[in-house]
Structures are given as structure tokens and as C-alpha cells.
Length: 157
Image 1 (cartoon, rainbow, N blue to C red):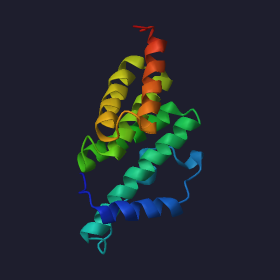
Image 2: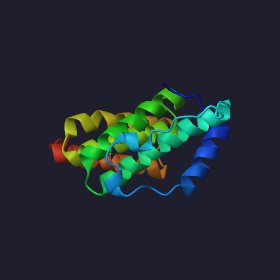
Image 3: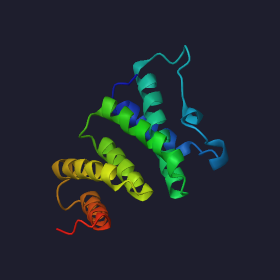
Image 4: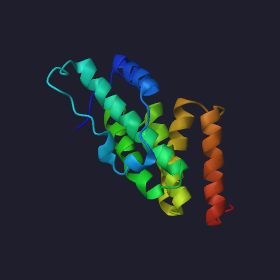
């Protein structure tokens, strides 16, 4: 189940992210940790949208945190969920979706799954070039990541 995107919902979720303390790594054992369900009074579309956005942000943030601590297997389902939700909600060319594609590709690269990581990094790079341009810092960072991946694969052409 996806949620529709609205600017108000995105801003509310962003503001909520700034005030939410992450759980300890021990309590973050599964994606269910951040399942957020609306209550009966939460039926306004902007409220529901904010809840969906917060869920996406928490999944992505916790996935990144677990990855930084070397828990690649714990991070992967969270990053995949964030990507799936963002694709459904925001579309393939939204900057947050592209960031999720990049993050999942980087995780797979760190796990050593270079063949799965490469198409994700290429897709994110294509999107960054279209939406941000060739000289944007995120585009340049991704070019470097893809270059490192190709070097690791021995593809030096």
C-alpha cells in the first residue's frame, strides 16, 4: 500500500525526522520496528501522507545506520522497503527515490554483490544526471562509486 505525495506531508515528515530519536541497534532487529499504522483520528490525507513519509524516512535512516555499523543483512530489507515505497509514492525520478537506489546499490557493493549493485548505480546515475546535472555533488559522488565498483569488478575499459 503506497501513499500519495504532497509537499505538506513531505515537510511534516522531514520535521518529524529531526525530532525522532533512533532506537538502539539491539532493538532494531526487524523492519517491524518502524511499522507505523494510523489510528482512527488520523484519517486526514495530509496526516496519512505524513505517516507514510515518516515510515519511508525511518526505514531509510535505520537501514543506513545498520549499514554504517556493518549489519548489511539487517540493512538490506529496510533499504529495499524504502526504495519500493519511494518508487510507488514519488516516482522513479524523484531525488529521494534516486538516493534510495544509490543507497541500495552501495549496500550491495559493500556486500560484494557487484553484479546486482551495478545496474542500480547506473540507474541512479542516469537519474541524477537528468535531474541534478553532471556537475552536481551527488552526481559526482555516484560517478566515483560506480568507478570504484567497475574497478573492483576488473572492468577497466
